[in-house]
Length: 121
Image (tube, rainbow, N blue to C red):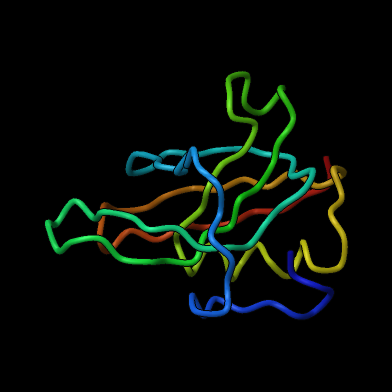
């Protein structure tokens, strides 16, 4: 786990996350709302849809309460570097369930991007 103000997305410096993976995969225009209770920043091997073969990527695993995700596992795995870079500054100072994170996806792979809105819960 990253220490306060210390985190990296350099895959060679990250620890492999345990399976199963639960990738946050939203449709174009889709939204997910979550209250993050803990997190791990690590890496995983993914197999992109474009047939380019497996590659290691940074993954932000965010644990959420049952009200946000009623089924197992109790986390989402985020692979978008831009989304990880938006969320991490809120997490490195200490996780607070008093924040609501709203993620909205615009576009489709591989050029999709995510907007993050954070507000008090």
